Amino acid sequence: MRLLPEQEQVPELLVGRETSDDAGVYQLTDSIALIQTIDYFTPVVDDPYMFGQIAAANALSDVYAMGGKPTTVLNMVGYPVKKLGGEMLAEILRGGNDKVKEAGAVLVGGHSIDDQEPKYGLSVTGIVHPNKFWKNVGAKPGEVLVLTKPIGVGILTTGIKRGAVTQEQEKVVTETMAMLNKRAAEVLSDFTPSAVTDVTGFGLLGHGSEMASGSNVTLVIHYHKVPILDGTLQLAKDGVVPGGSKSNHKWLEKDVDYRDIPLEEQLILCDAITSGGLLISINAEDAEKYVQALKEAGQDSWIIGEVIEKQEKLITVKR
Ligand code: CO
Ligand code: CO
Image (cartoon, rainbow, N blue to C red; front, side, top):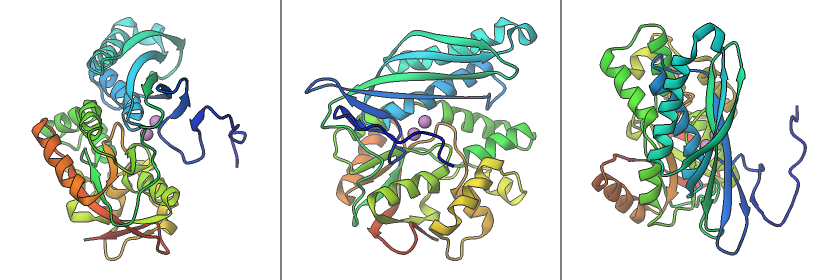
């Protein structure tokens, strides 16, 4: 069912809704385009300060995925203040604002409503040069794929709720989600990637399939090269997989050739992620340089596959 009316075409609109890109881009002047995005969700971790950081890092990420700089943000809050009191909410907002400051953006307002279940996120505005933003499409055969954060986040956070992860695993996944994509994007701006997106709710293969379909290419993902958080595989084998990841796996079935990859590893590749890393298509030589430069800046990234001419399926997974 079509939920939204068709995209209205105006000349200033550089990126609209057609390719499910990370944010809208609207040209203001010859040198400035506006980037706009909004994202919010229910708590993914118990610690309210960490939840605030994660929700903000996730919302800011869509501006980084477009190659932009976040400028101003608005808080979006749903909260049962009579039931839970204000203290926890203050911690959520403090966490969010700390990430906004780290991003170099400024909180200018927001809106809150009384809600049964807590919800928090941001509407983020950023800026970018109208000729220099990155779309989630445009990947070319011969390029390679780089990923800037490990996956397994949805499975591990479900594991936390079921008391099935170690303290160390919980710490690592929480820090992974709270990390901004700022550095990954800033280092990438020294290169010219063909396509960039961030890996979130549709999982690595879901966002990869959008990149493949909009670019008219096929992506080859090498399972053993994909960084996966410690503990993820065991949880997946034990059946600790969130509903969102299972539905990603289901709707991607016709688009992915999994070869001999077992079901639990397929589910990991489809795992719904909160605040994931950037997925980048870029020429092989620059990919090596980028991974090195990002490492020197203090962050790991991984070359996980390549782009080939369009095949029958949008994605092929190899060992
Ligand atoms: Co996104
Ligand atoms: Co988003």
